[in-house]
Image (tube, rainbow over all chains, first blue to last red; front, side, top):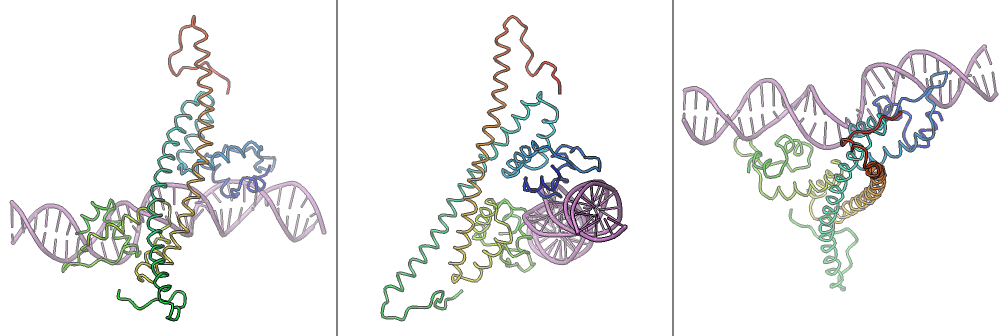
Length: 142
Length: 142
DNA sequence: TCTTGACTTAGAGTGCGCTCGAACTCGTAA
DNA sequence: TTACGAGTTCGAGCGCACTCTAAGTCAAGA
């Protein structure tokens, strides 16, 4: 598989693939006789996993640590496990944080909704007045 | 309240507070007669809310939109509500994404745990051998 | 009066993660 | 044979969100 196809299949750009190779996130790819990168399909699994780490906010420098442990063989599995466990803990914390913020957001949005509701009630309670055009408001001091 | 105290109480640095004012995220602060910023405690609530937006990954340019709507008065409340609702949706999506990644992470970690368990079982099944020091492994082809 | 330290401004610098450009090389199809 | 498109390397540039520096001002305490 050439870099273009890998790009299509992985969702990365060719620029990013070369960049990842340069910094060591992707292993140095074999080249064909005209020195073009030629990939094995298995690289897709690795890229996909990197994508998950990225999605969960792992900085590249840490993905790099993981990649290096991987390159060093199965002796490093406990270290890799530890790294992923630390990361998982951070992600869990992050999820909790986001959920807490969602509650605040709900409250805030609820507040705006109430105001809008009171305005609608007010308009409805004055059926003899001409209904205001949507969006129009009385002038109001700042 | 001077900028130093606000920094202490808000968790931002004075640098960041000035930066936020410069870009319009914080309102232009009143200055005392020697042109030092003098804050009202109410600014803390705003900073706290900005913090939530930031925590949930809202880019500054969007916080800026919200801040500008706010400055323009209560006519903009429906727009602010809409902005927050869009954001809430994105945050929910993000939480789902993170939870999905957590599952994958669990699987991966589970895989490493299994390998470690098999190694422990292997050691335990050979009671006549001297127990290996923790961390030691047989040499293994790469 | 002198010193200290918290403040002021404008603007430069930083770290991250890409993203792009320039100049070049190949292999293939018209 | 020539033109095209996909690839190559190296290095510069970018957007974001700060973060820091330099040079100066000012008020209060020793």
